[in-house]
Amino acid sequence: MTDDAIAEQVDRQARNSTVLEWCVRVGMVAYGGVHLLVAWVAVRLALGSGGGTATGGGAMAQLAGDAWGRTTLSVMALALATLVVWQGVVAVVGFRDRSPRRRLLERIGAASRAVSYAYFTFASARLVVRGPAGSSGSPRAVTTGILGTPAGPALVLLAGATVTGIGVGLVVFGVRRGFLGQLEHRARQGQRRAPIVWLGMVGYLSKGVAFVVAGVLLGWAGLTHDPRKSGGIDQAFAELLGRTLGTVAVLLAGAGIGCFGLYLFVVSRHLDDETLTS
Image (cartoon, rainbow, N blue to C red; front, side, top):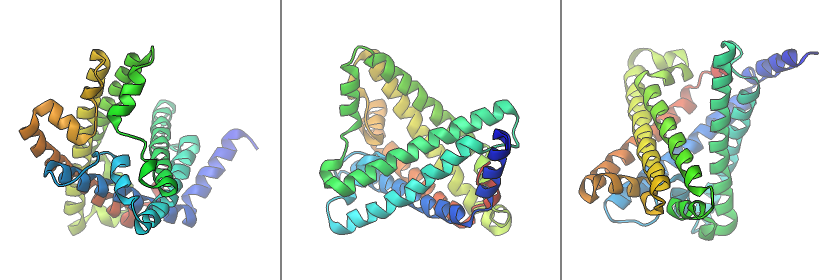
C-alpha cells in the first residue's frame, strides 16, 4: 500500500470515528472553559479585585489551590490532550480535497493548533502535579529570560510578528465568518444562526485584537530590549492605551474572549463530523 493510500485510509477512518468525534466535542468544552477562565481573570483584574495574569496559564493557575480545582484541571488536561491528537492527525492527513499549496498551509495551521493545545495540556497537567507552584511564570518573566540570550531580541521580535500574524488571521476569519463551516447544517440555518454568528464573530474579533496588541508589544519589547512592554492582556492594553482606556479595553476583551469560550461550547454541540479532517 502506498503512502498516499495509507493517508487516505487514515483520513477516512478519522472522519468516521465516533470516538474521535466525541473526544473532540469534550476537548472543545475544555478549551472553551480555558477561555472563560481567561475572561473571568481579565475582568477581575480590570476591576481591581483579583490577582494573576490574564493569560491561559495564569487563568488556569487560579484553580490549582484546592482539590476540586486540581480535579477540574485533570479533566481539562485529558480533554485537551484529545485535541492535540486530533490536530496532529489533521496535520498529517487532513485537507486532502484542497490544492497542494492550500493543503500545506492548512496542515501547518493544524500543526500550530496542536502545539497550542499541547501547551495548555502541559500547563494544566503541571498545575495538577505541583499546585500553584507549577505556574510557569508571567509572560514578562519569560521575555526577560529570552532577552538575556544573544539571539534573544531577534527571537522576541520574531515571536511578536508571529503572534501579530495569528491575530490578524483570527480577525479575518471572524469577519469572513469562516467558522460557520465547522458547524452542522442545522446550526447554520434558521433561528440558531444569528446567535451563533454573533458569538463567533465577537469571539474571533476579540481574540484576534488581543493577539495583535500582545504581538505588537512583544515586538516592541524585542526592539527596545525592554521586557516590561510584554505581558498578559491586562498589561498589554494598559501599556498601549494607558490605565483608564486600558481598563475599558480589558473589560471589552474579557467579554469578547468569554464569547469565544461560549462559541466553543456551541462547536462542541453542533460539530460537523464531516469536517473533522478538513
